[in-house]
Image (cartoon, rainbow, N blue to C red):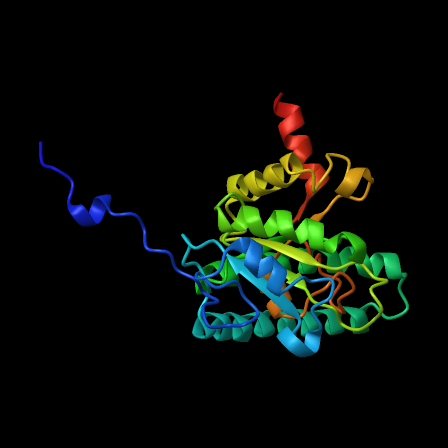
Amino acid sequence: MAQASDSALAPKKPYNMYEGDSAGRQLSETVASFLSRLPPLSTPVGNSGYWIYIADPQSKSRPTDQDRAGFTERGREILEGFEATRAGIEVSMAGKAKSAIGRKLTPLRKRAEADIYAAAKQTGCTSGKWMLFPMADDVNRFWSLVATATATGELGHLAKVATDDGSGNVSPRLICIHTEDFSDHEDVKRVLERLVDMGLVNRKGPMGDERGIYYKADAFTYLGIDSKNDWGLKASLFFSKDVLAEEKGKA
């Protein structure tokens, strides 16, 4: 039986997509040092930009600028096509009840959403994220847990947290826990289950409330599609309570 080569047995060389970026954790610093250097509660936007980042050093997943540009071009074409079709329907149904127009538009919206996801897969822009919104007083604690778990490969390939935008720390802060492929449902679910195990998400919702958290494909972020978008598209792909209910139903 042939022996495995030395290269096959060698540990995977750590890689950091944020190496050299002062807003990201460096391979030369411990997670504790990184958290001390950039505490999200008190790190201003002016110092580090809008985000603080940490990556799983064993992952190399990141869409290139060319991937993103190709997807964005295709995504805009899809949205422009939807807008044109919607305008035609609204003109042809002028005077009809809004509910009737809405029923006509619903399948078009679902098709646009499906086309955007397909374009993201075709161009390699497959990442997505679970989103946590802790209040400012809790953001350092939440981020410490997320950052540590990301660095040790327990969550997704990267995570980021919003810095202090100067608004007085009265609004929740966004923490994104990214996974490599929004279509990999098992991995998306695995990361959510780990967040539950860590106490960051309750099975009823974050910290025991009833709201739950959402998973959004980065492709929709690249196109500026938020929860109140002008196209009426569904911005999120998964809801934590639905995903956790799947597990409960199998038990």
